[in-house]
Image (tube, rainbow, N blue to C red; front, side, top):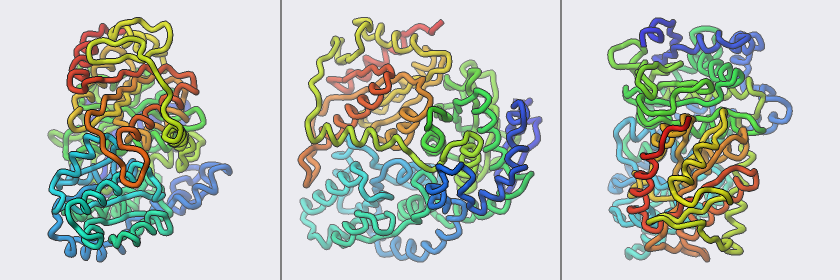
Length: 559
């Protein structure tokens, strides 16, 4: 820790970055000097769409609004105040949204201690539980940039039907909805038909960069967050973004670019426990979806705690993040990290949440310039969606398990050992020196929450980076990296039997069928790339999770 604390701090507006300069100086040539010499900071703030190359120019031209959206978002404040007053009797706020429409609001609400129910799943059990919770006092924020997100549309339909079934008229049901979408989207038309409140978002900001737009502010304002503070924090940082020095966002971006181009293309994200809760989940999407394409990218690995496995390795850059405490203050900024608890993060980022959002967005845009990729598109996200639609139309292919052990059916490629421990060892042992393992759980992230314990267990056994994602949520996040990034991943998909299904009103399928089709569609996309995929289906979810954790915990470390 003392080594990191002895390094210079780069700071502006309460945001501090330490360690970034050392990462940059370790590169054969300074990335920071190169981007500064090309006036990348100034050109980025001026929204120059040519920074990412000619093929990216058209996309960048309509996606750089995030640079100053915190100023335009102030125009929303009167509308948010009016909404909050008008809907004051509806004190249970539910956000139906995927990816960029829900990750930032979740961080904001958790960090600032405000209750907000996030519904970013197609798991019928999780949806049923949400519908049964304080329905008469619920306001549903339906957030979708495109207005055609299948998960969000299905959740909207379920809530609409639930309100009608509870005896509300259509006019009364409409009052329980607030729609956040881009101007002219199909959802904007639907909102008008429903008689719902509508807040139009900044159309020049992509989903994963939308933390300080209506997508981040509407649900959190309704939940009681003073969102003006977030805008003030970003605004205070904005003045530093063109500077050559005392520009912490530039320092972070240069460090990410220098590490990735130097072979450290995995980033372990670790909370230092100083007041920001869940930023790693938001940054995971920002990093993976922005950089994971054209066979290159930066893999984010969200680690549960500073002592969690997965923070070390020659190809891993470890970044800790925290709240307003600056690096070096008691209790903040430079946690002891690593499997043995004996290391320190390579980079520490501390500061208020609004500034963190803007700094990370800026840093990833800089890293995109360094990597030579379009930081604003997501060319492979639609692939699993298209596979899902085909399966919903034609039905899922018939599959037989390779073997069944206890409450777990195992679907494995030919040649995999016929026991659960052996199958898991096969998956772990076949990880290459630059590989990673992704755990993809199509389960209920509330009642099946223990499944997340697989990540540290498998990381301990593998000695390689291991990620964990709840399906279908991760399809709007790391799913882009899985398909578009370096093809070195191995994949463990966990699905579960649906005991009580739930129809999607107005559609010929149920939530359980949609969830199963999404899992099958994603498996197909990975199999088409010849990537190792092991599927475990839990015939009894509770027993299956317990069994899987027991077997995984007993796996020996890979040599």
